[in-house]
Amino acid sequence: MTMLKGLAITPPVVGRISIGRVVERNGKRLPEKDDQFTLTSQVQNRDGWVLHPLDEALRKETGGKLRSIPVRLLFNDPALNLRADYSLFDRTTGRPVCVGNGETCRRMGKEGITQESCPGPDGCVFAMGECKAYARLNVRVGDDDELGSFVLRTTSYNTIRTLAARLAYFDAVSGGRLACMPLELKLRGKSTTMSFRSAIYYVDLVTRNRLPLAETIQEARALDQARRDAGFDQEALDEAARSGFANGAFEDLAEDVPAVVEEFYPEGGADLAADGKGGRAAQSNLRERLQGKVALVSGQ
Image (spheres, rainbow, N blue to C red):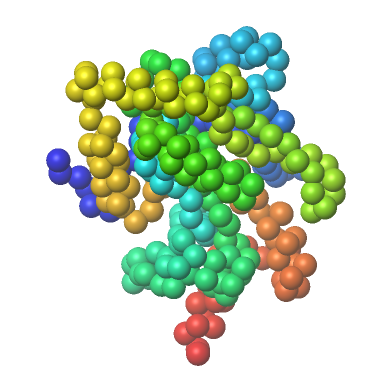
């Protein structure tokens, strides 16, 4: 199959999973966290993202707030289901500026995309505190489309660390049968000193309906065998996805990134944090800071 070079081929998305929404306050659009999941379509109107029909169906089953979602994974490889990077976006254009993994990064500059060393957000003088961990998890919800997925995007370290651990553990105990395990996303709350002891929420991945792990593995083994008997080639699907991700420098499409920046990189919050560390003016924007960094590097 011929693919356009530079365009990441990502899993088909039929909807979004979010924990909150973007609201307008004092003339600014700011993210507002919630204590439940929301499933939306990929369409927006004046009131925000349009709810997906599965949102109402799942709420009827739970009888209230949606704090768990039955899911299956698309791939056996944990790294294909959950992709996490350190990401820096230009809020003015909505384009990715730098994406790294703590060792190396791909950085967009005047000369195009270059590969640089990546010290991570805390040690990066280029990002000036604007870089965040950013992850995308693709899951199947419902049985209508076996190759379509809902995407959960997050910058929560608690969520990223928990999901990465669960995926690695489930992969190990199931003998590499992640895509066959009946699982569910579960919203958990915790309080920390940094949250001023108010509840913060993160996403966990657990066995569905509290089914014992041994029974979950048995079900995964049976489904895996049934798929193989039917000619379903999971290994080939994983390889196709792996090649698709590797085809592009950046995963998110330009048309999707502005919504990501609006939800996860609010202008006000980042500026206040920057002022606390370096005394920069609250109204300075990311582009000005990046230009200053480029000038500094050029003069060294």
